[in-house]
Amino acid sequence: DWTPASFIETTVQELKEQLGDDKVILALSGGVDSSVTAVLLNKAIGRNLTCIFVDHGLLRKNEFETVLENYEHLGLNVIGVDAKTYFYKELEGVTDPERKRKIIGKGFIDVFDREAHKLEDIKWLAQGTIYPDIIESLSITGVTIKSHHNVGGLPEKMHLKLCEPLKLLFKDEVRKIGLELGMQPHLIHRHPFPGPGLGIRILGDITPEKVRIAQDADDIFISNLRTAGLYDKVWQAGAILLPVQSVGVMGDERTYENTVALRAVTSTDAMTADWAHLPYEFLAKVSNEIINKVKGVNRVVYDISSKPPATIEWE
Ligand code: XMP
Image (cartoon, rainbow, N blue to C red; front, top):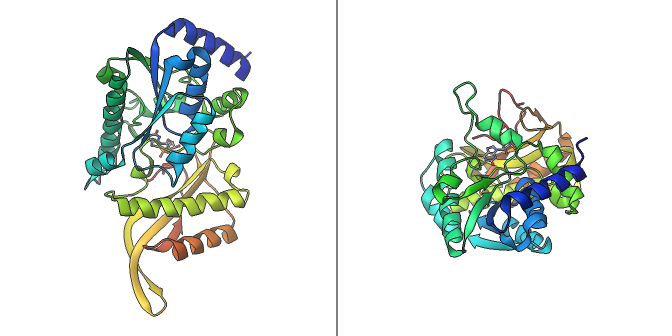
């Protein structure tokens, strides 16, 4: 019978046999999948695992610092890399969603490649790929829905073998394993966040100023979900900065500013999702707070589309 404990026991044993004394590098994203992968590998091979956590400048507000601290607490051997400037430059003027994903994906590869070369004798690249990532990237019908940047590509370029211990699991199973491994519940119950981050939640081109707006709006939305006790009731949530300006009024002044869309969904595996039926009073509070506090936003809308036919992300 499958239990988190039996999975851990079997997998740690398999990893020990598969990896021996080899050195492994792993890309931490701050998310549940890569974090659980790291802790699992740490249990199997200890200091032979080096984790790299890259700040691509498209993370949530204060995420990099907070998460890096968490990782150090978990006893992981982790290197934090600030690559914001590099990513902003690469993304300048780019509006096409798949091109953004490709650029961010390639940026990751380049940064890791650089870091990996500073280390000696790395043989393996470990990734927190889970089953839905693989399915969504497969061209069953000849059409790739969205290219998930954390699937494929990396090992060839880096001449590394690929280690993906969670690739047959769904999210809820990964969470159970994380808890069984003794990871903090708040780390385990974090909402999924896409690898390309705010890069695909800022529709159109990306600028540091737009990142600031998206981060501030997102932070207000997520903090309010937490205080209202709604965070754990939704699968994931976030703010999307639309490339739309509209007319508003502030005091006696006419404004012509940005629109933020709030997205919150319920789901069990991200393959299908329903929009979260958040209370009106809650939405009103979040909307007011965003419009009052986030400079550059004068309108907030709520996304009431389900997946399918809409996707969870807007890009
Ligand atoms: P969609 O938008 O396809 O999202 O309904 C399904 C789940 O996947 C996440 N997502 C991504 N994760 N790289 C990732 O690592 C990506 O490019 C990517 N695009 C979407 C999304 O947040 C949701 O959880």
